[in-house]
Length: 148
Image (cartoon, rainbow, N blue to C red):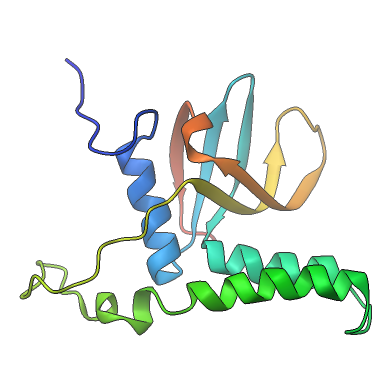
């Protein structure tokens, strides 16, 4: 028995939903992703949180007039662009039993999975502060729970 896939070919619709919730509401989940030849375990975070953390990592302790600061500014601008979605929009008013109105915004399209504190099986003993991968490259996944 095959499951229907309402999303883009190669995307698991349930994983897409989790990523959309992370992007839309800032929810975080501990999960394990299986990719071709390796696994990645970490905390699913929003694209906005990823962009903000990348900005901080890229700039480090450098002053604002450096090349690193310019790269960081690009990530901060992207994070700001993502700020208008989710809890700040009508999605923050959703009732768990379903919306009363059809004028709610659509969930964001997602192409990437963003993880914080990721452990990649091929990098034994190393934790990556941030990890980003294409959702279409995920072969399998499991939700471990809400991070502590």
